[in-house]
Image (cartoon, rainbow, N blue to C red):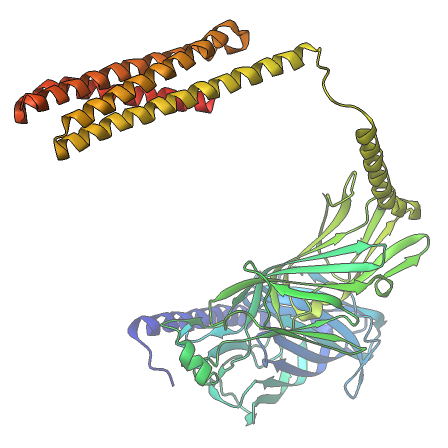
Length: 630
């Protein structure tokens, strides 16, 4: 048993109060209806056997109805009734004839069912009409099986649990078969996944056999009889819910059908609270993670090949495939176990032989493929199926075994001109019972298959022709053309500027030697060495100045150097000014050392010159970088 915190207890109390309110309002409505006599009383259900399977997250209710016509007029249809609170979770409804002894007559063809709204009935009841194959005359009877599949019908109670807790759920229904017709005798069996039952509604003639709860039989029940029952039980079955699934089925007439499925899955059971311990989960997974599911099983069509399983990170290696001539099973294990409220996204893909799914009929080709997901007991909130047809397909027609939202778009792929037509099928609240075959009919000219090879051959042909032309044609520019001459002139200008920059760099290196001689002077006091260094530097700088003169003359005479010439001249001028400042600074310091002048007076004499030297160095460096970029 759970020890609930005050906040958790408040939430569970609200859930119970909500259930009681729904039951009370529905019970009041049915009590009023049961006192009303309608024309529907001509039909009698002589026997009703109901079986509710709660062994998974999907609630499957199978009802075997023996219908009798007690009135004089023929009966061609019967009504199936659901409370509105239950009908909102109805995902699938099917009816078929029954021969008795558990056999379903013509099980491959279900009876037509449509939603109706009989006059005088309250909106809290939802009705569906089942059309009979032949009208029932007075005193005639037949037996039909009705399968109703509900999603999200199991409510987690409590709504939040820790890693160590088991998962308990509530299920609400009626022990009496809700019908607008009187019922002579009826029984109900509720099948649970385990024999552990926290609580259940106890009525007359209620028995428990293992994991089954049996209600009835009950006799002579009036129309709209309702006996609410609530079962609170343990289930640790996977509550895998795909909030969205996008299936893309791409047809290639070259022999392959490629299927790609994008899943966005959440654990729809009791939400996990508190911390998660991987160590406890690995050591005792059945005790410290009983409510989590670690893997999913997908039953793929036989002869599936090129199977992959990946997510946003990349390929996931924790998967296995078993195949035989009848089926291919893919074991999908996410990167981490999924507890209540946790979610994961992944993609699986596989290829199939074209001849197993594409056929021809009356001049048309048609794809015969399954609609739902191959994953066992998966609830899909929103399913989108995309069928990508070959380019050039036309006259498209879709046949589905149940109503779906249809649309069409275009997909551009490799070697396409106008794109490939894509058939869109969308349905909400999908269960494994929807995994039926649908057909997409279309016309396709076989000559269109030659388009892609023709494009490839043409592409290679023109590539080879271009290579031949390139090898044999002289594409060089004439040396007498204006563009060639301009290019040659610019190359000469660029080479000259590089020589100017090289000389400027040599001048800057000489400047560094002058600065180094002053540092040696401050350390050794050798005035003669400093004078010799200055004399050598002055000689080098004069030589560099002579080398610059012809280069500047060439740039001044070249029309290609018009834009960059001012910057080059400014660089040379700034460098000369820097030479003069450095020579003056050097001479001043050496004279002060000869006259034994130092300290504050030496700094005062050199300060103004030093500031100017720093500014000039920065300007020379900026101009040098600017010219280098050009």
